[in-house]
Length: 347
Image (cartoon, rainbow, N blue to C red):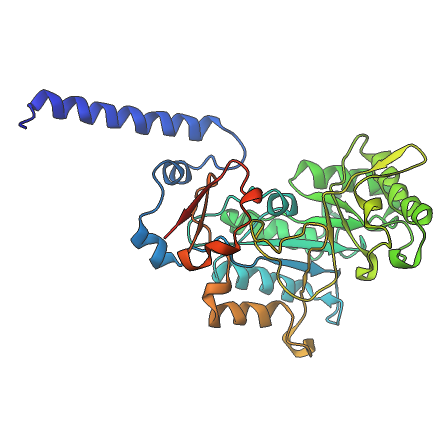
C-alpha cells in the first residue's frame, strides 16, 4: 500500500501532539516524576536491549541505611566528613534516595538503571540537627547531619536526598528550637518517625506499656506539629512487641497507633516491595559504619561491594513507575497481590 505525503505529514503532527501532551503533563504534575525525560520514559518504556544493558531488576534488594550520631567516628557514629563520603560514594555508584514510605508503598521514582536507597536516623541526637549563630543569623550547622545533607542536595540535586528521623523526647537538643526543627524537616521533604519515649525493648513490655510508649511519642510530635501522622517506627534495640498488632491497630489515652512499617536493627538490605518475602513490619536495615569497624561484613560498604560482585541481587529501576520489570527467570518471586495497579513486565 502506498502512502501519500499528506499521510506522513499527519503522522508527524500526531507524534508531535503526543509528545506535547506528555511534556505538559510532566511540567504541570508537580512533585515527583515531573522531569520530561522521566515522563517520556514512562510513556514508551525501555527496549529489551536497554533493559539487559542496564541490568534492570525491580526484584533486587534495597538498602535501608541506619545512622545515629554525626560526630567522632565510632560504632554508632560517623564524622561529618565520612558521612559526606558515604553520600558521595552512593551517588557515584548509582544510588538515589527515596523515602521509606516510597519503599513501603512501592512508589519508587528512580531513573532507569539506578538503585533506590533509604536514609534513616535514630535517637534525635543533637548532632543530627543543630542551629548555630553565624554573622548574627541563626543557620543550620553545616557539620550536623541535616547540614551535610542540604549541602549535598545543592551540589547533587538529582540524588533526591531525603531521610526519616526516628525521634526521642530529646528532639535534637536546643529545646527552644524543637518546634522550628520539626517544622523545618517536614517542610523540606524529610519525615519524622516514632522511636518511643524511653527507648525500651518493646518485647519486654505488656501491650498497655508498649502502647503508652508509642502513643507518647505520637503526642510529643503532634504537640509541635498538630495532626502530623507518623507512618513508621524504628524499634528500639530491634525488639519487636510480644503482640505485633499493637503497631497497627492500637490505641492509648485517645491516641491511635497505626504504623505501616517498622524497622529492625541491621544487618542486611530489604527485599523488593513486590517480593514474596517483603514484610513492611519487619524491615531490616544496614548499619552505616566505617569499614574498619565492620567486623561482621554487614555494613554499608560491605553491601555495596556485595552488589558489585552480585549485580543480579541489586534493585535497578526501569524508570517507569507504572511497571514492575524483572528478569524472566525471577518472575516466580513476584507477589502478584503486591503489584497493585502496576503492570508486570519480564524480559
